[in-house]
Amino acid sequence: SREQWPDCPTIKEIRDQGSCGSCWAFGAVEAMSDRICIHSRGKVNVEVSAEDLLSCCKLECGNGCNGGYPSGAWEFWTNDGLVSGGLYYSHIGCRPYSISPCEHHVNGSRPKCSGEIETPRCSRRCEAGYSPKYSEDKHYGLTSYSIGSDVTEIMTEIYKNGPVEAALEVFKDFLLYKSGVYQHKTGGSIGGHAIKILGWGEENGT
Image 1 (cartoon, rainbow, N blue to C red):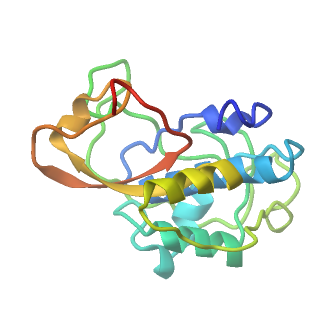
Image 2: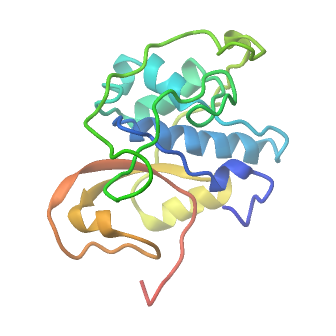
């Protein structure tokens, strides 16, 4: 995707969900941002707000920082729309992310991630100094749909329409993953995770 659509900077952006189980929202808004750019042929570059989705999509999306449903996120984008919003403390867009980054299973300069914090409050107004107003900043999806887990289907979807959101089961050895093609070898399941898939490749025959 990065090579096919070089005019879309969000494709290579990595966001940090902090101490909040908001992967379902992050995988969604990351792919939505990319697709808005792709389908506008690079004319509309927007970071769709994870904060807006996380805090304002209630029943159909699940439990906010305690986990949610990717399918509900895409339905919400289609029906209710989402405003813009960049990374934590970026002051980019209408509703930037309010939860600070943290170190996920590694040592680093930021504080370690702790348990899930409280879901931010749904505020239907933009941060001070931003215009247009909230209702005018909404971006909408044309339709919401899902495809199967067949690899060829996923590749075709990415090639035609851009990055997708996917869910995977996470095993202990994934926490040690650094780069390349991941293959599960050892350790039990530690839960589910939602991600953005932006492309594919081969490494040592895998």
